[in-house]
Every structure is written in C-alpha cells, then in structure tokens.
Amino acid sequence: MRSHRRAAPRAALITGASSGIGAAFARCLAPSSGLVLVARNRDRLEALRAELPQDDVEIVSADLTTPEGCDTAAAAADTAGIDLLVSNAGMGRIGAVLDSDPKDLEATVQLNALAPLRLIRAMLPGMLERAAASDRRAGLIDITSTAAFVSVPGFATYAASKAFLQSLSESLAAELRGEPIDVLTLAPGPTKSDFGRRAGYGGGSLPAAASPDTVARVALRSLGQTPTLALGAEGAVFNPLTFGRQGFAHLLDLGRRVLR
Ligand SMILES: NC(=O)c1ccc[n+]([C@@H]2O[C@H](COP(=O)([O-])OP(=O)(O)OC[C@H]3O[C@@H](n4cnc5c(N)ncnc54)[C@H](OP(=O)(O)O)[C@@H]3O)[C@@H](O)[C@H]2O)c1
Picture (cartoon, rainbow, N blue to C red):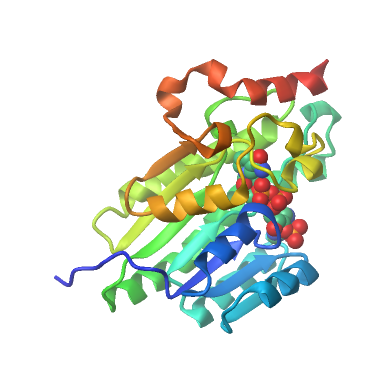
C-alpha cells in the first residue's frame, strides 16, 4: 500500500474566509497552498485576495445556509482539487429561544450544522480519491466551539448546533481511520473577531480572547497530531473532559446576561 505523508495542502477551501478565524487560516496557508475562499461578502473576500501573495486564490460568494450555496462551494472545491476543507463559517445570536426570530434560529443550525455536513459529504469522495492517487494526506478541520460541551441557556441554538458538529466531526475521525485523511475537531474559546458583535454581545469584551491567528496556527499545527482540541484562555489547549463546568463560566455568564 502507498504511504501518505502530511504536507502543506495543495489547495484548501475555507468557509467563512471573509473575516476572523477563516481569514487567519487563509493568511497562514499562504503562499504555499492554492485557496478557495467562501463567504457571502464578496468585497471582503476580494480585499483578502489582494493581500495574499499567491495567484491561485478563488473567491466564491455563497450563502451556506442554502443547499444552492453549498452546491456552489462543492463545485468550486472539485474544480480546484482541494485536499483540505476548513469548515469554519458560523453564526449565533444571543437571546432566549422564545425571544428569538425563528429565521435566525434556523439559519444558525443551517450554517453551523447542516452546511458542514453537506460540504463534507459532497467533497470527501473527491478528496479521498485525490489523496489515494498521491503521496499526501488530505485534511478536514471542523471549527466548533467550547459551547459544544455545555448547554448554554441564552445561546441555546448556537451551543446545540456546535454540539452537532463536534459529534459529527469526532465520529468522522473514527470512521476515516485507515484512510489517507486526517480529521481535526477544533473548539475555540473566546476569540477576537466580528463574531461577538454579530452575536450581540461584543466579543472583544470576553476575557482572555485569543487572536484568530493563534487559533488558525494551532489548528494547522495539530492536524494529523490529534483528532480533537479545545482552546481556553488566550488560545491555550485544554481538555474539556477534565476542565469542569467552571471552565465554561464565560459562556454561562453570557447566557445569564440575556435571561435576567
Ligand atoms: N469568535 C469567537 O469567540 C468564537 C468562539 C468559538 C467558536 N467560534 C467559531 O469560529 C468560527 C469563525 O468565527 P469568527 O470568530 O471568525 O467570526 P466572524 O468574524 O463573524 O466570521 C464568521 C464568518 O462566517 C461567514 N458567514 C456567516 N454567515 C454566513 C453564511 N450564511 N454563508 C456563508 N458564510 C457565512 C462570515 O462571512 P460573511 O458575513 O461574508 O458571509 C464570516 O466570514 C465560527 O464557526 C464560530 O462559531 C468563534
């Protein structure tokens, strides 16, 4: 049997590349990997492309809450022949379920849970085929959240959607053992990005938030070394099984604020 090595990806597709952690992945993978950058905001994707040193950067403006958006991204992945998929796009909106717009709740599940499932299922066969025909291992990086490990009243749908992806991704790592692909499930803690502003809590205010660059670098370094990782204060790695509930205090406080 041919042996496969872990090397810098030939081409990576990153969802949610227009800001935060996704844009940091693109910067970290430059200049050695071709890139397919996916998000809705074309202007921000164009601005990122202009900043990157390599020529082979493709932009896909797609809404991943829709099946059509996922199909568009999957077609671009096939054309580019990707060997790394970073499922990173995500959203959440703080608020009690009863006070939330049902459309927001559904979009959260569509983007955080259903889109990664659709993209992985669509892209995986091609990625495995290409890896089998080469000497390089392919990779999947699934960005979850420390909210995947606890229920978070006040941020319930977000936490539930991330628990779905955490479980899916960890199971995939087991199912794909023996295949020329590595799977990393990465649960970031508070990270400095647009996320908190969009979610309605102002993310910069969370204590000890990590930089998106730290999150992306830890992920790329850990792919193939470990199947799952969680990040705490300032991006430090922790084990969610032994961390205890107090380790998630920032999340529980966040939820409590809206429920008062
Ligand atoms: N920041 C944190 O504290 C934190 C903590 C734990 C986990 N995370 C997770 O980390 C991931 C990245 O978040 P971030 O912190 O980098 O936040 P961010 O700066 O808000 O980035 C979110 C990305 O998702 C994209 N996106 C949102 N809705 C989309 C849609 N319908 N279709 C396609 N793309 C969409 C956004 O681009 P467009 O608006 O251009 O579409 C953006 O590129 C998310 O999965 C988030 O849940 C973040």
